[in-house]
Image (cartoon, rainbow, N blue to C red; front, side):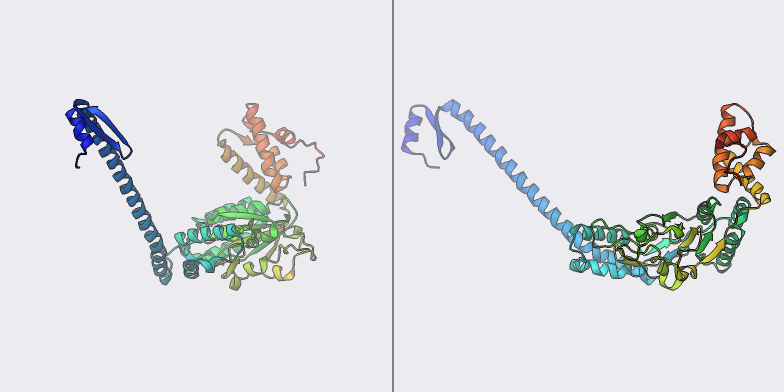
Length: 416
């Protein structure tokens, strides 16, 4: 840069004019100006380097975002290809196709506008998240298969001898599945009988025997109308049903569902609520259960392998069209000899659960008294009696332990 006359004059006087910026100049002695010039140059270089790094980071961030956008756009195509190959082939052995229309769902997601079926943005977001999870899980689910089911059936019949008929029906279904090497299809059951006979307990034992997850719907609850197949998808508080959650969002194609207390379903024909029993018509019918629709997410799936066990105290209030879709079993109170066998099985399970098989036993009078209780109360009485005996340091449960455990006198109405 050419020096001005003023700068030349300052140099003659032993000074140098140092320019810090366009508006700031300072006249400094030559030795001081030399040092200051180096510092100024260093600061300028540092500022330029910092600016360069900032521009570089910004460019890298833009490039990464662009690459991520391209990757996001490529994901649906990659997922579609994987899904297409999966749907073109048959399910692997031990698996069942519960979402045969998953390919159509993926095609709908390509056009985002096609998926917007609700004016509520939260509903649309929820549906999109569910669709993503289903696409990731794929169209097939594992089929739960019982292990050593014959032995398990024998143990179940020993524990609940008054359930002989439904147990025999279940045994036939499992034998047919084994002979044909196909998933077991158990006819929907309706267990009729008074409370306390072990109907709910039977359902839990069946689920454990089949090695399948299980859930229960109480038809004495107001929410029973939407519990099985979901609530209306147009509401932000909508919820998917038990069937969808177990079959599609779960890992197993053949769960067990307890339809508890069907006869206690309350429905006023003039109200806006859905009839809780009306949802059973389609799911209990083999032909229509292949195309089960959850109204909350508007997704169709195959729920034909689900095992249904319903309970009721009476048939009054249950439509004939529902009864015709079920195998109805009337469960009678156990006979005296059956009650003793049930009591013996209950005692064995209770002692085994507490690890007291070798340390504690029930004497004959205690076992006979326990047999006079309903199956539901047997477990409760046995547990309390065991706790009392252990607390007192005894190795035998006697009759008095049961009287104390149940808070009964010898004229107690809990006996039958």
